[in-house]
Amino acid sequence: MRVDLFDFDLPEENIALRPASPRDSARLLVVRPGGSPVLADHGVSDLVDFLKPGDALVFNDTKVIPAQLEGVRHREGAGGQQVSATLHMRTAPNVWKAFAKPGKRIKIGDRIEFGPQAGYAGNACLLGSLSATVEEKGEGGEVTLRFDLSGPALDEAIMAVGHIPLPPYIAAKRSEDARDQKDYQTIYAREEGAVAAPTAGLHFTPDLFAKLDAAGIERHFVTLHVGAGTFLPVKADDTADHKMHQEIGHVSAETAARLNAVRRAGGRIVCVGTTSLRLIESAADDDGTIKPWSGATGIFITPGYRFRAVDMLMTNFHLPRSTLFMLVSAFSGLETMRSAYSHAISTGYRFYSYGDASLLFRTTK
Image 1: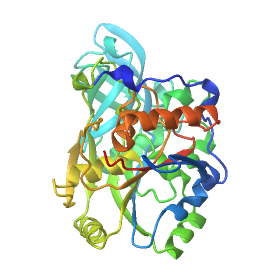
Image 2: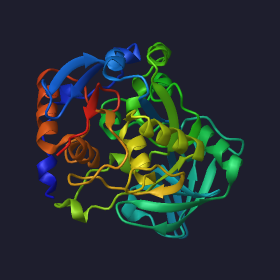
Image 3: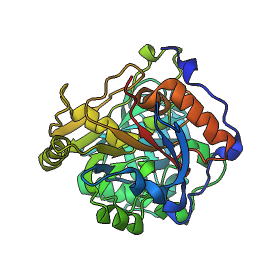
């Protein structure tokens, strides 16, 4: 499909720079393709009104790590150069794939020293810095970094010298601060490894969980470590020419069995966020049976995709021409979602990571 079909104009004033407080006071646009009305304005705290006993919410319990590293590139015969690297997928105990800037000037074999000695005024790890060798170089500034440290020691060093990589549409307007360390993390985050938050989950509070429990709504957790590729625009003119970056995920055998039991009993699978949806759809067979899953997924969902297991989706409002707007258009219909986004923009909904939410019902067409 043509990528320009997924374009729209978004005023800057609709981009949220801070989350709603409390979290569940954010707005919720309910989208029912073919319903009456198709669009309805509500609040996140009203979520329970659209669910029924026996339905299951699926959350992504990944935890954001301080994956933005600032450093200096060293090369024999050349002076040091400031570089920035955003880790996005771990491939070995001491190896990460990352997006580096300025990517064109980095070469295989370069040494990069990250940390305060390299010019970043953050906390120092015990060694005062963190060093890596550029092992591979790909397209779009992607590099493979082999660190001198490994396993838990590497984790500790990243925690010491890194900082939270705010989405570029927020970082361009303000710097990260202490509030973001809490705001940019779900209340149920527990599996470290994400570069970006599963943002639909940011709306949940203990009070909202209590309402859902009282209504007989099940809660289940999967893990997909969101990568920096989620921020990348689609540069191709046709969706067939776009390559998704892979992300590491896990669906336990116990969770798969419980979700299959929900479906057999007539309950609905309601994914909180596109990340949990992409993982569940990756783990589902053609008949909708969800299997245990562990590994990388690069699933790219565009209109025409046949959803196997997911019935409803709660998600934030996404960028123009993004793979996520393509996904929601596949889920609820392109024309329905164009109308929904037009309504959201004109009525002041807040977009992106810290913005408001939508609750999408799946189209039957």
